[in-house]
Image 1 (tube, rainbow, N blue to C red):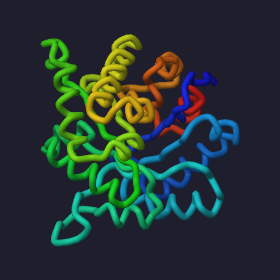
Image 2: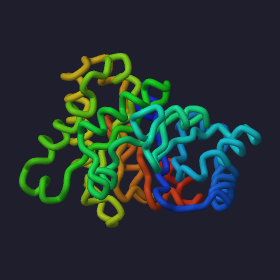
Image 3: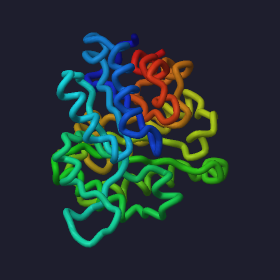
Length: 260
């Protein structure tokens, strides 16, 4: 396993999206836990982000078996309660010992019409309940080919972090996910991924200062696999991965946690 040359604990999070019912979730997570040992957890923070319907079952299992994985949610609403049919509040998630909440994933933005302003409300709501947002940013293929990738990501960061204190920004996770690489089998080159993650850290430095930028963790997401995780994690500004399809298979995800 590669040791990162900074004080930021690598964070590998599995985003299951709309996959695995609660029975399957228990089986998959147990199989994953059998393959990981104490040394793995000492070097990497492992996060599972299942569908909402799996959270209570996994919370109970992780607590009962004392498995040191963190629970994450894939989304939340920004209000505490109210007449919002079909939504889940951050307070409800906090009661389930959820530690991380994915905010502003490109699928939420592209399919469900979430805006930068909505994402900002969610970031603040997650922080209010002492959970950690995984703030997703990234560009489309058209935006990259037109030379607008950095401008798109910078705008998402400025809007998503508006009104958030420097102290809170320092605790966040930002996931850089080039939209054209999500679920397509295409992956940004290691050089491109590192360049954008370094750009993100520089933008955060301008927003919140050097200390926050150096503390904040940046993940890469977009067709992450056991075969490419090692190269990605060797990059100076990549502190982890937000893993989609490969996180559904405990064998593959264990290899990713171990950087290949």
